[in-house]
Image (tube, rainbow, N blue to C red):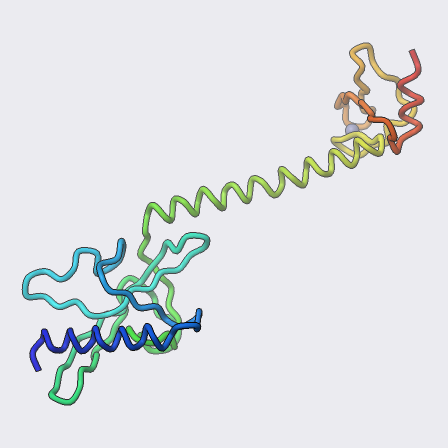
Length: 194
Ligand SMILES: [Zn+2]
């Protein structure tokens, strides 16, 4: 069998596997054509054959990858992949394989634009979570007539000339504007003091 015939045979098998994995979202995906990242971006050079698989990890953008390479052994009866080994990854358990995922490895090759995208995304999440929590706590304290900074009860404390109440506990000044239906009658009373 010539190399071209072997490639044709592999292509036909990939098509079959595409049909087999339909309706199985966790099954490995196969694609033809050059991907945007990985070992096969540039395709094989003259006289060179690249065989293997690239796997990428990361959330929300898959951004780190490793490659499992192998050599195609063609006999009249079969096409097999031998000498499979990992490139750009650290095997933790199992035997690397370009065809099945029954091993675990740490990916070590970055896809920079995606990695930067993930850094921006997770930075925003880490910034947003405490910001929202702090804002929520402040609003809750404010509604109860407490100091937004330290939670000290500001009931009965006189409002200053600038309409701010200075917390005697931490020294922060707050404008305690209450909407109608406030849960803090004590504070409403304080505000009525001239
Ligand atoms: Zn305070």
